[in-house]
Length: 625
Ligand SMILES: Nc1ncnc2c1ncn2[C@@H]1O[C@H](COP(=O)(O)OP(=O)(O)OP(=O)(O)O)[C@@H](O)[C@H]1O
Ligand SMILES: N[C@@H](Cc1ccc(O)cc1)C(=O)O
Image (cartoon, rainbow, N blue to C red; front, top):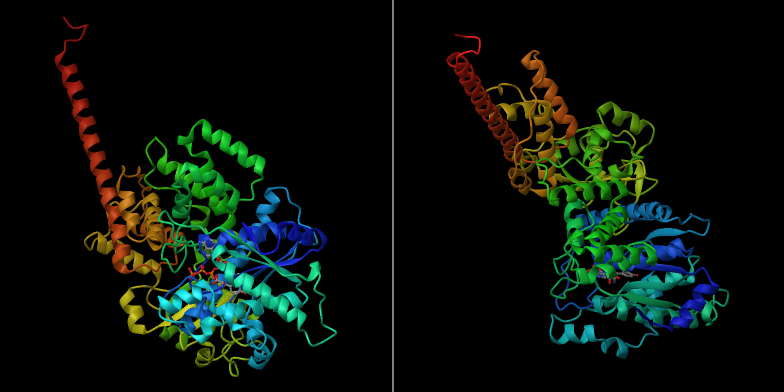
């Protein structure tokens, strides 16, 4: 770790004052990634030791884009995307903060009054600070020479596509954030970042000192002593095997969004790390005390093939990023998959997977928040033509239209827009900032007043369940073959039934699907949603599951029963008809295989039985003669 103040100064500052500390992240992609955890871990540690800890979303800075270590200017982000990224990252950070509390309890830390955390967005001050203020307070005093001498600026100017004025002042925007939180009640004294942020953080420290020392308002002037000294530190960068920084720009990120990198793959990433790295990873990525890490390493070294240390780090990261239950479920699946006794064909649904289905909308459940897909698409005919209750239901935020009505009546649903306004008078929220107002019943035609960039609608149930709805044209929706909850003439039951029949050559399967088969369809569809068509291939390798036939009842009643179960397992299907049919087809093939095996076995058993009978008939009985 590298500090921009001596270690002694920093220790003394932290000993004498509960300083505020922050990590900033620009929402320039739809998710955080593993690399972000590295600066966040020391922030979390400081939180657990009573320092005011702040995660800052760079809603304003993202509009410029940090040029550090880049040769090409970042492409502009469309407003709709930037709203989506900001919202998603906001809720990811929020969920991780909740998990930090849970992990801290697991490790015996007791939450105290001093534990203080905050999630802020720099748009909140950039949208109100005047340009003249920044120019006169900061730009006027900053010297261009040292800024021009920065390696990253020189390289981009000579080897890259040049440096725009906005990019040139980017470090000053970051510095202004530092100053805002340094001089205000947050009392921020420290900024943490990856080692690529060294230049920005040191530039920030210089700027904060300058702003502190040139404060014109005597009432606000802070003394230049240790307690009012900005400091910073950087953490090493997480790199891939070729030494490239892990991140969005390099295109090698392991995303923390389970829909972008599923839990199984995230776990697998840690399982594949070389033995030489794993101890370091345990120290960087977990809250395990050092003695525990030493113990784990001792046990690991006794039999490295068991990869004990790898499992430990993978488990801890998943518990922090997703949830403890998800970590447990993924670990079980991983062990089953790679255990020496052959893998199960159907890995059990994890807690997260099971709770991902909107019929379980219970805002208190954390694992639901994990698998609750925040970004979805819905057609224009719904968004612009139907009531907000219908939209809430279709977005999976309400179980039924009635539930949605109740929700709206009790002001439990929110829509992204300017606070204090109504559907009639709403103004789109300020760029880079995410604000909500309670949903009130309004005419369907008014929903358009909440559309950001003409196509994004933000909806929220309670505090945590957010949906970023992208409105697509009706043609696109039809072509995708998707359905939404409550869509007229497209009940999932009806569609699934039609597809099952279609997959069976136009006839009702005979015998009808068993409960296990229907469950498998549901599971395969859920996995395909997350993993793509690979889910089918993976499941292909071992023997099909044992199928129990349902008791004799009317075939129609049984079918209906099974479709209902399938729907419950996965009512929010966003796969195309083709993909769903493929899943069903696969289950049918397996079922046929089982039937054939059973038939073969039955034939064999019959043949053996008849041979025995024949033998009996032929062999003379001991009593004969
Ligand atoms: N691979 C990584 N290892 C360590 N820290 C990282 C890594 N990637 C990002 N960070 C840190 O996370 C913080 C926020 O980074 P941010 O998302 O704003 O940019 P970024 O991920 O570096 O983006 P890009 O890849 O587009 O440059 C910074 O402190 C940055 O140094
Ligand atoms: N510049 C940082 C993000 C950041 C933005 C604003 C800040 O105040 C701090 C950090 C990065 O791109 O990695």
